[in-house]
Length: 123
Image (cartoon, rainbow, N blue to C red; front, side):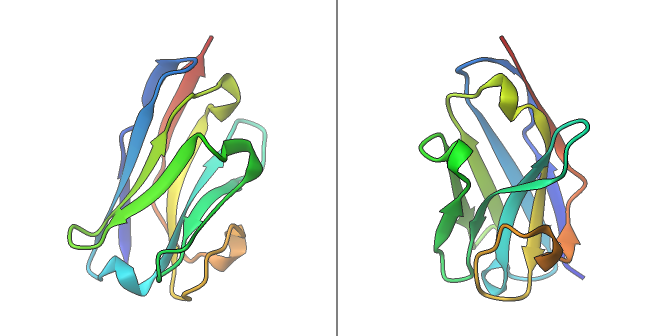
C-alpha cells in the first residue's frame, strides 16, 4: 500500500510563495502518476496539476505560470512550488497517486491519497 504524507502548508500573504512536499513510502514513485488536488470550504475537490510516470505534466488553467509540479525519484518525494499566491488558492491541498502511467486531474482515477496540508492566502 503506497502511503503519502504532505507537508509545507501554511498561512501567507498575497503574492508570496510556498512549496508543498509529499513523501511517499513503500514503493518507488516512478511507478505512479501523481497529482496535487485541492479543496476549498464548500467546494468540490479539484485537480490542480499532475505528473505522469514518464514525467509529463499538466496544469489547470488557474495555476498555469504560477505553480510547478516536480518530483525527486530517489527521495520518493513529490513537490508543488506555488508562486504568486492568491486568496482563491486557499484550500486543503492533497497529494494523490495512481498506478496508471498517464497524467490525470480526475479525482476518481486516484486510489492513494495523503491527509492534506492547509494553505491559507490572505490579502
